[in-house]
Length: 616
DNA sequence: CTAGGGTTAG
Image (cartoon, rainbow, N blue to C red; front, side, top):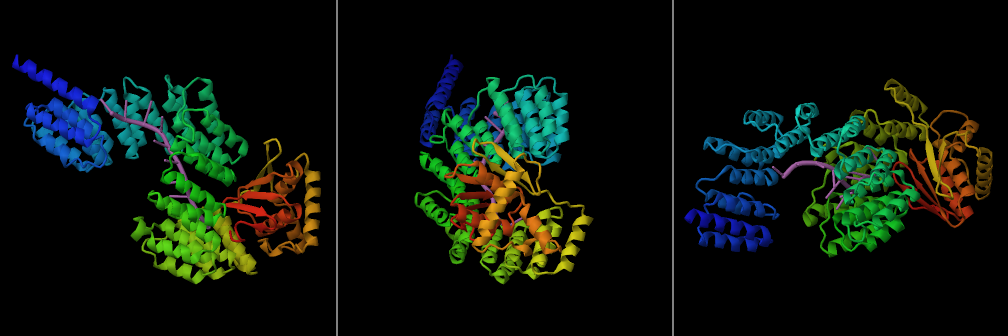
């Protein structure tokens, strides 16, 4: 009779926890109820209270939850496992291992939940495989949850082979097991293996499909990502906000407005529209900005009901790379005012903006304040921004000094910023120092070699140019062919290579380019011959400059877009100085807006000037 | 209980 009453009371209490506990205060009320009814020794009741408490953020496990646990004299394995899970999720992780040992010590045998709670926290492969052996000895490796968490553990330890072995030896697998491995392959950049697994997956669900879409997007294969998204929808698989984010990121990489508007429409018509969904909204902001359309990015931003640090940072970075420094800074202060804490990316955006506008003092002030006032410790990336800010503004010595005295080891970005500034300000000495470091840090980054050799070329140091060329030959680094894309009237994208002669309209294009250059010459344009890094005669240089892919794309754009639209050009390499001048001039003599996205940033040409203020 | 997610400069 008595036992039966206790059982009923336990049952009732757990029901109360499950249906009425939503705040810490509720939990404390329930706790009082537990004491009144003498249930504080019940593993069943306390396990459920713990399970609830660990869903509330910011409650340290060692405080209230662990206290509740230690008041139970003979905890059962469920109660142990609940606390192990809490420590495994929120740390300190070592505590979960200690609890596991203490439970063995007290002859309390683990259950499968014990292991599935434990594995996700293990980052040490030695410890991980030891516990794998335990799980095996206790007979739990045929348990799906346990095996799946073991796979996950090996993946997180970087032991993909071991994870695969567990997977291959499992008697039964579910979609989770497959997807864990698919994602692991995708993250290691091996989309072929991911795809092979996915093809063999007999029960593809939304998550596994999404993993493929996202995997292709993250591995810079946006067309593949779109292909999988299409197949997914054709197969009637549901899509959610995470799927959309993957597709949106793919569209951002393609940088074409046709795709951008297409996916935006799909998002708007789903349950995850940008107005209500911060995740999708922030992704769309980034996408429009990468498609060269900051106005539309800002429209999305304005239409969002909720905004967080991601939305603001994406917009700030968007304004920054488009040269809209004041808008970026204004947004930064607006964000502070409404109480959103900036993070490291926000500051990268802010410094990039300052750098563009030559706002050296403003940037330095914020750099000095970022840790003290906003609690964000500067990283090497922020020092790279500062080196860029100082260097771009012409303070090369100051930039070099900053780099040489920074508290952490400078990374490639830091030296790269310095090299870029040396190129702009034609300083072969600083360029040499920066590239010496870069050649060690990034021996295969071709851009660095080219920038150094161009800097030497600008200074007429042809011996040094050939020395760098030789270095490139030795490392077997070959120049990518320059390539540009431009959107024509009907949204079709046309591709041009440097020196292209294959385009069906090449004669019209050449003529249009020639006409344009004649008009530019009439207002004083001179081909920038010293930006050609080859020691050849002037006619050769002229010819070479004429054949740059972005000029062909520009001429094509002039012929094949409406007069009131923006000509959008994308380029795989950095835009050259001569092309930059031509774009400026073209925007003046034709009255057209031109946007060029090169591999560094956006250039908005309007009425003869560029948003980058001729620094890039 | 286990799987997919956003912003990063040279």
